[in-house]
Length: 309
Length: 285
Image 1: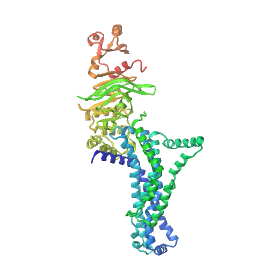
Image 2: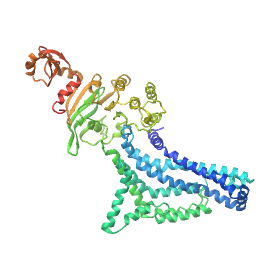
Image 3: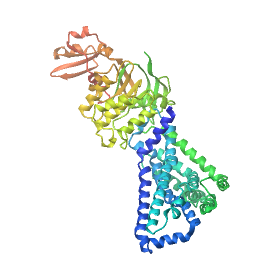
Image 4: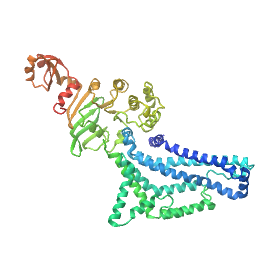
């Protein structure tokens, strides 16, 4: 294995060692969902008429509808995970370049032949590639476990688990669309994430305040001197989950159509790239990416040249 | 023999203080250099400049490279222990070994494990669970397993108890040092490194006021224990420093021949600590 590859692996593993939340948080979340599911199966179903009624309803719904439900499983499960990902991302990025300075371990990392550029880029890779990959793996595994258990409960009601549940399960149905959606969202959030990274590189203590107060101050100044809200609107537009910039809204609405079965995403057949083109055509999308790049360059520069002791 | 570090006119300004004032020095292969000075004299600044951790003015070459631009490249052949306990608390011992092994082309994993076997450090432990002394042992094991040309140690034993301190330097000498290695070390505890140094550098207020090998230090500097009746005669030769020892006077001379001093009393080679005090006179007080 060449040196660059080895360094990359080491840097990414390092992030998973430091941030056990990468594993723990999705697993805990999956555990909670599993417990809720079991509670519904063990207490909910018997109270709502018992397993046989439940199975009858399923049979009544018919194959086509059950197939639709099967395809919605992964996107549906993924949604709460996405919200969790944003929260973990926030804390991760604020911590990413300030924790090593707080505990002075930066002196250890800097005693090794790893460039500051590689280190800072590894933070990006960890949070936009490694962590989501873990989350997607957990979501797929959870969907399989839930499907398997549903089939078993179907048997309690005298149903055929194969025709009612298992034949409709495709762990990759909807996964593609879900991932595309996640990454388009992530691209939209990138400037916010870059700003958090920069705040982390800048502040040893209180990176959150450094991330929040300067933009807040600018927003207030803008209102005082120009009586306008451009910055505030820009920030809200970036932060609003799923409802931000109009491009995103439209895209999300169409995404729902996609989930309703217009498109078979797993094969990628007929994926409408056009709906992203609208977003990619907006200047905001590109200025946002540019801002994220600028923040990253500044963070690298700070880690490389700032002398704090 | 090659020169590993060459500084010419090295200067570092912090706002209005001059941490390094136009300093020249060089460090050749195979030396163990002690860089000694009071707090704020510029020791750590000099090391940081060498390691590419700080900006500076003047010329500085480390392994023929400019540390301002080539930090990561230099770190392939230069190691440093900046301070005790800079290993992050969450890091597991085995992960630390894996990390260094992956990023460092000159790291020998087996050697590192051998060093660790002699200690009580367990590979499954996290740094946060280790005592200060054990963390230093781990850090030293990681660093000694790297085939580096220059090892830089900045107060490596600060805050350690005496058992670990002794062991630190003895394992450094017996398991690591040879004629192809070079060590640059700063410390407050001059006594504990005095025996292992080949070269001595004193730094005071950003200037190097002594830069010599230990043999020439022994030739240049002489301590004479003089009875009070001969004190005036000895004083006439211009001692660097004098102090009272059990009713006698102890003079420290620079560049005065031993033949001339012998008539005044017993001759000694001053300890680095005594020499340091004499050279720093007027600053520390």
